[in-house]
Structures are given as structure tokens and as C-alpha cells.
Length: 338
Ligand code: NAP
Image (tube, rainbow, N blue to C red):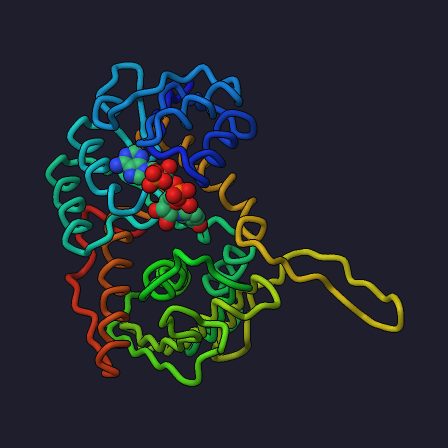
């Protein structure tokens, strides 16, 4: 059976996902699209020669009888209404991160899904599908370095656009570490602390950059993450787990090692899309497959909610310079980890 998909939001990642659903992945077809920029969406559909119907209303698209499942790639603040609409229609939905822009809205999605009685929501935390992170997790699960004790990470972007404001380093960039480290360690966070030091002169418009985040988990694992979004030299994601008997590092992306002009060099990527391009393909293919089986195997709405609560705690920790407790209930049985 081909999964008939409706996509809400045909901006940058919406277009990428539509192209991969149409041209790269198997088992799905995009039959409906919606965006508030109707003319641009119609032009995109024509340019890509898609057979999809263009809707001028997202909720109407969700209810369309030929739409089996939804992909939500609209602006973050609109995610909650479309995910709630999908749950009300009893349809599976893949929602790009963030699940919602407030923890309260994310919690309302969790509650609606539990009331519905079957998991329908997957959140687009694609790092869980990266081959390197999967190797790291397999090594931890196999006990290769004993129990994890500490994790050192860096999240570096060459620069950020003018639209990158306020606390986005925590809520938009760091949120990927929030999810992937929790998954990697199979653990939850209990406290957060955020430290700012000397800012780069390239941080504009009142941005603080870099940030240094310290997390503590229930098992007592200590995590430090440098988030430096104007590092200039490349897009560089580092993760090192220190265990009882060894150290495991996230592998570097494959790249040619050159000896040339009296130097030894290896290119570093500059674009996050390139770094995680294969993960997006794996993520959506696995979502298609599990959705066709009536299951959710990826990050759940509980994971989206947890990420939201943790990001909020980090924002508060930055503002107050205090160590902020992350208070959240135990994972409900409905969302028990696989
Ligand atoms: P984008 O280029 O701005 O695209 C979002 C699109 O949604 C825009 O066309 C926007 O219109 C439209 N939109 C806004 N409100 C809408 C509504 N109520 N109904 C229908 N369409 C609406 O942004 P993007 O970069 O594609 O990001 C989209 C989402 O994906 C964000 O939540 C982002 O955080 C997430 N994302 C995730 C990753 C990842 O690594 N997992 C990577 C990139 C993006 P306007 O332009 O007129 O507002």
C-alpha cells in the first residue's frame, strides 16, 4: 500500500522533504500540500511536476479523505494546531521540530494523543538516524566503554542569519543535542546550567555567543555542550562519551584526506543540510515503513515535550545564572521506550 501524504508548509525543509518523498524514498506519495504562500506553493508544485492538490487551508487538507498521513513542516508556532488536528482526525503525523513552541502546547499534544489511545505523532529529531550517532549508541549498548560517565559536545555553525535572535542557540540549535543525548544515554535530565563568557565580536543584535550548557542526568552523567554559532570555519558537530573503560567519539563525516602543497588537509562541511542529508532520508523512510505498519518507532510527542521542557529550563538557567531543576513526570507507560 502506498502511503498518501499531505504536507503542510512548503518552505525550505518542506520542499526538501517533498522531493525526497517523491524522488528518493519508496512507499509514499505526496497527494496534497498547503502553505500560507499559496502562489509560491502552486509554482513549486508545477515546477516539480507533482500531482498533489494544493489546499488553501491546512485543517481541510488534514481531513481530506485521500490523505492517510501528514508531514508538518510549517513555521514552528503553527505546529501544535496541525498536530492536534491530525490527532483529532486519527491520522499519523510527522512533525518537524519543534513539536510546539511552548511546553504547555507540547503537553496538550501528549494529552490529546493519550486520550486518542494510539500513538500517531513522530517528531523530526533526525540525529537519531545519523549513522555515526547510531554507532555510538550501539557501542554504549554493547558495553564497549563500560558505563557512560561524562559527555563532551560541541555544536558549531559558521554563522547564523539575521532571523536568528534571542535564545535560539538554546531553543533551536541545542534542542538537537537535548534530544539525541537523551536517546543516546537512555536517560533523562534533572538539572541545567548555562554559562556565557566572552562573546565573539561576530555575535550581532545582542546575541550571546558562545553558550556553554551543563546538564546532569538521573544516572548522574555530566554533559557539557559548547554551542558556538558564529565559529566561521565550518559546521562541526562533536560528541565524545567518556566511559569507565574507554572513550567513544562521534565519527567525523567522511572526507578526503589530502597531502598537497606541503600540507595535510581534510575538508570540513559548512552546511548542516549536507551533514545530516542521509539521516533525513533514513528518518522519513523508517517513518513511512512504521506508519504503514500502524506504529511509531521514532521520537514521540513525549520526546518533543521533554525537549521543550529542557529548552525552557536552559533559557531560565541562562537568565538567572542558576542551576535550574528540570521537573517532569516519569515517562508515561503509553510512551515506554523501545
Ligand atoms: P521556512 O522556510 O520558513 O518554511 C516554513 C513555511 O511554512 C513557510 O513557507 C511559511 O510561510 C509557512 N507557514 C507558516 N505558517 C503557516 C501556516 N499557519 N500554515 C501553513 N504554512 C505556514 O522554514 P523551514 O526552514 O522550512 O523550517 C520549517 C520547520 O522545520 C521549522 O519548525 C524548523 O525548525 C524545522 N526544521 C528542522 C530541521 C531539522 O534539522 N530537523 C531543519 C530545518 C528546519 P512564511 O514564510 O510566509 O512564514
